Image (cartoon, rainbow, N blue to C red; front, side, top):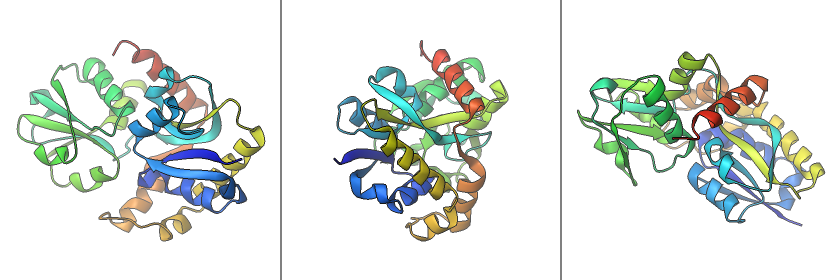
Length: 248
């Protein structure tokens, strides 16, 4: 039986993809890549069996288990979930919010309320929104397209770093879930494949195309910004985050 598995289509998932493709389990998987918001919808609509999904979507899902020891997390700066602005955030009237995102939008709302203590207008977006940043308009940008914006704008507010300053905890952006009926043996094999990929990031990068991002930047990002281990501190942080966003 083939199990449908969805992985986020960002560079931070390269180790997961490499691990899966270099494991015998791969022949029993139908692998697809999606942006975070689509991955959650796919699971909700019964279009995938296993997925790397945004944690903010978890409360809307049913019939699943969090099965893996690994996740997409960070401990302080992450570099790829940032508000980019040409004026201080306290002077911004409007923030464009990335249409790729679920978790980061909730995190932004939480930080605006409890950390920055401001209330700018939040505007939904489509493709190319990150090019519309102006003096009164900032943008929440996530994923690979954030890399090349750091030098283009005067102010960069890293949301993972702000969360750490506010809570002293790491942050979890996405975790691995599977339908409850999926065999534990299959999940164990997938989990093992993730570890292999994480332990072989250099090899994973060499077999993956990196578009418009410096190789050294990506290597540093995967090894020093993304924290893949879904440990107790991250589980604690995730529980706190999910509790705090219920009214947002």
